[in-house]
Length: 251
Length: 182
Image (cartoon, rainbow over all chains, first blue to last red; front, side, top):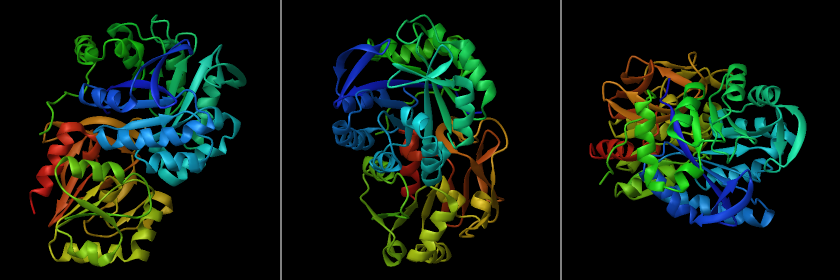
């Protein structure tokens, strides 16, 4: 089994990194390329770039950000937000994204999952589920659907999803810990790896999530102290979770 | 000059960016003569075995890769690029591959599939990034991770299941070592 992964998530709007608390009240915290490189060299195992505005005019901006990130980043990254078609996914992957994350569009048109997976393989397709009251939500967590979270996760995998990025809307931004119970139920129902997301407040929270999930998404706890990612890794390892050893830079 | 094989799928930008990081210029091409004459060829790895082999056969790149191998000229296959080097793959209902290495490709059976993440490759003792659902079985294996083949070599062909271009400083150092063989 691969080592547990720590994945900083950069929320991007209009080409800039912003930070969400309960998906509301965004505040600008920087340049995506600079931050991606910083995390790439500073202890991230992988990155997620999420376009939280995702208006059609943002798509061109996102493609150029993805290209610039790919040119400096030496670790894998996933891009999500506003991907509505195979062409959208292709543009991002061909600009250098390793994987795309599908959310609202996959709920509206589940066949999109298979279409992207057939072209680029399941390992390139993440299905993100924003879960609240045990149902999947669309539009950045604002609109509830009638799809129970677990059965949607199962269907997404049957259609070709290679990983589930599971965010608990109620835990997100609260720093009260991940929703371990929900994460466990989804993990037990699907054959693919799971990224737990929403609610990290401490190294202990992340370590507990990594006992259940294959990876943990982290946002505010690292964005407010980006130099603290290596500290966070050490604290998680002291709690008994094996992470990859971080090497000095290659010269 | 390094030639990166273009077979119309996926993420060649990262491979070329990594080559730039280790101070090599590269071209992206499917032209058989260019592939035959390059100092070093990288066969990158994203996409499915069937469409990749179809592209390689139609463009003539497949035969150029076979000739390079016969002439002892260096090629590095990455991920699918390793899987395409063996005799056949179970992917997509069965696909005949390049046959540079003995062996075949089967679907991963253990753990969560796709296998995504960093694993320590033995006997090298370094962690590299893996993202795959199929793996090779070959007597030419030289390294393993989590019980699956992580690297294989025969003659001047080296194949790795992990992504050196996505494996941070360790990956770039690996790429540099491969390139320094030529």
